[in-house]
Image (cartoon, rainbow, N blue to C red; front, side):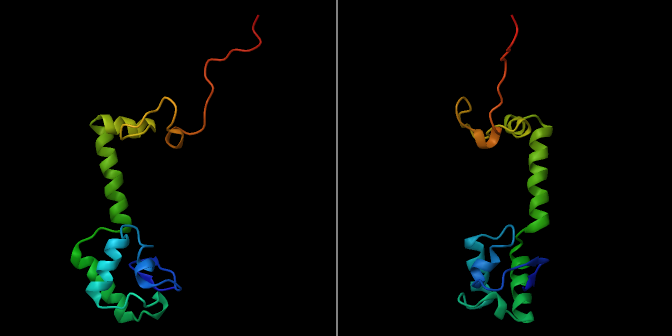
Length: 125
């Protein structure tokens, strides 16, 4: 497994698909990286030399893209900021409810979790 910027990318996949295993690099950025470095999109990641890995790393740094830890930290900081200023979106994140205006009366089970029965008293006479 080639190691690229601290992340193991799979051996058996073509280069644009293997690059997507890095958090912050999707299909478009992977294709751009392959194009900028001049590598073949049909090349497997197991065929990468040390020089090719350095080319890919420098292409990511040159473009100024945040990936992996830096990107995760930025996203968490953005959510913390929204919660700190107590804006609507921040409160929705804090409460674990849908953030973008979806209905919650009947749906939103992914965000709310499994159903909890509330207010049923049994056995009292």
